[in-house]
View 1 (tube, protein in one colour):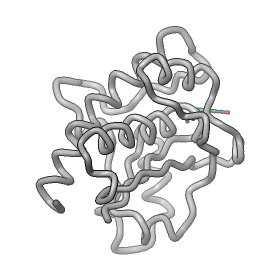
View 2 (cartoon, helix red, strand yellow; view 1 turned 90 degrees about the vertical axis):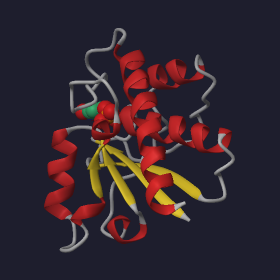
View 3 (cartoon, helix red, strand yellow; view 1 turned 90 degrees about the horizontal axis):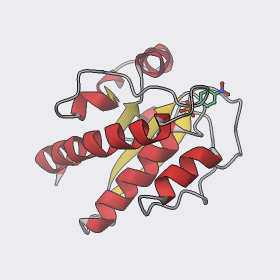
Length: 157
Ligand code: 4NP
């Protein structure tokens, strides 16, 4: 089993979207028994909460139900348990590197390093900006999810 963890700041907007989009993708590809997906936040502000209602609504318009998800914080054993730790932005990446046990840094990636034809490297945080930010998050994550799945297929399947 290849285990993928999506990480943002609050675990209520971007990383739950990563979890929802990637889970739908692997299931549509018949890979649900080979790849598992989870998400977490670097901060604890929203622990125990479901994804932001705006994120849920945007995902649902694309057929993805995230209502069962609950926010949690990244923990030390995530670096051992998961094969891919996918940071949504540079702050998340730096925060993960700061707490990563020595020797496991290679598991941490910037999500948009797997996206194609996209200049930005950070998925913009839509929490305070709102607007079409939730659609932008979905577009970027759908794009990068294809590249991530390609990487997993190349290296592990
Ligand atoms: P996320 O968005 O990191 O994509 O889940 C945020 C959600 C909440 C906060 C910040 C970012 N907050 O400061 O409460």
